[in-house]
Length: 301
Image 1: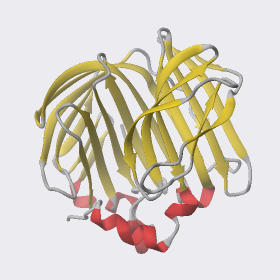
Image 2: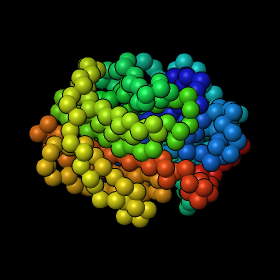
Image 3: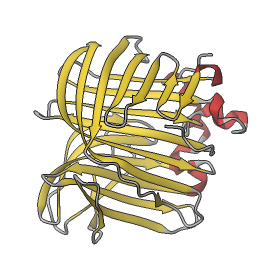
């Protein structure tokens, strides 16, 4: 799964257990988009700024890890991607993710295996900006997952999602802000994008993807304001049916420029639980924010 040689590229996956009590998110990045080290270097060598982010949520406890490494820790081929001690392997049916990282800021071992079976591969990249410099592809929008971790100890199965993003310029140069969400439905997945480009364009996507991988663009729901994040006060919106009740079920991540949460809303009359993200790139561009990041994103050789 060789990421195109761009300014940045990342693979992303998330999942929620069948009982709704556990979840994870993982991001493997080449040209780590949120890395202060990459920005300070002048962004000349994306392969020298790789990051492997893991978020675990649930009864076994919350873990969060993001360690940046250099090019000597990167090994990639058509069907595998290794970043330090963690790796991804694709056998054309299942993606196996071997996680071996250290959580921070409290150092605790995070070690386990995640297996992801997409019901179909979605071969449909979407342009996110006006200039053709930023792309997104929900290639595993409907997936099944099995999770088996020894540290922390947990084992569960559920429904999952995979996508990838890539771009030819810094993310904050192309966008000021975006909201994104994905929901598992009985027939597949619903995915919503509400992005604001640096040039002032509002780029919105509303997609229904079924288990066969068929992508249908649907009418864009109404923009609805969510409560700001409780700690860092990042603004949050989502797209939902007009006048429908929208509820934040849990805040998974609350950072100076980014939030991840579980929300409940109605989309085309169906009541759904979504993984939701808000990203404030104006806030991210502030020097005081970038100076905070090394505390959560250590760099090792």
